[in-house]
Image: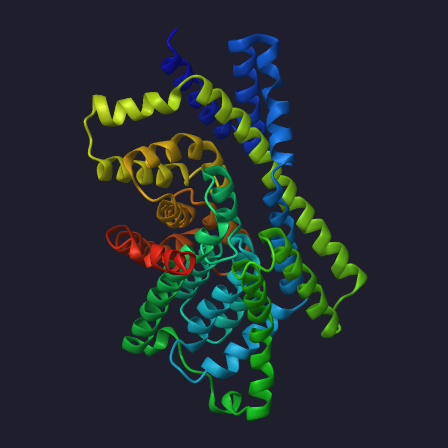
Length: 440
């Protein structure tokens, strides 16, 4: 039996088991450990333990619980609600203003948390009911929340980019800087789309009544500080890291401590809040660690079989494809897998195969990290099985059905595809900022 056939069997077994509804880390780890045992005997069965030890020694892994804690502390302490009130009074007079404010809220939440789950939860529970109550079109606003929530895996401090950096051995600081302009570009395109639709059809997003827009300037400025607090924490954290004063882990610790101090300063740091935040942080962090342990084991077996070289030979030798054609095929495969897997699972399953191939093709791994992340964003919200679609169905208020959710997302899929093409054709959108900073 050839090693290529064994690799195909491993991947097929993994996909079949995932379709049964089993947990991702359990499937990947099971296939990896059993394959290692069958191939190399009792010595191979220790690859799972070796993968766990490798992960424990990954010092940058400490950033994950810090960033997750920071995001949950800021969101659970009511900062997100304060932010939305600020957008309410500042953007309310404009047609579609609250929808534009929701996109701004998603950008700030992304800078607070780095996970799309947080943006989705806050948008669906805080922004969406308010938009519907104000007479906004339910299909458009559902799309705004879903599209905006995906920004959390691109705008720093993106947890996904941290994990990509660990696997690809690329500096996380470069990846974060590379995600800034693409993330803002995508948010800007979403805002332009919403503004133009509401300008052409004002009934989709009516302005607030005059009596609600009459808010004293002092109150407006006070509400505005709600947005400055999380941005201030983010700026402090990035400055400490990029200036070399603190390491990535130390900067993340500063962010976590600062978020707790902000909650305390606003009188919201209770025992219940502390307990809830710690529980959610532990749950998300453990999920990441289990998936990484399983994927490291699976990737080690694949590497031992020579699967990476086989894929390289198949694309470049047997099919005779050009580098750009291979890159497009890889991104299409991410879109298909995204219908069944979340972004972390896709990264840890496929990255050990694709990253060496990307290097062989001569592409910049920092730039490719941004392309990968945008492709995950698209896969996250693409029917019929996009991960975010079902999250929205679970969180959406009454009156929004699955048909509405499916209809709402296509304009935002188009915006993300346009962003992907722009960054693919003009890599400088992603690479200019990190290259400029690190050259200095």
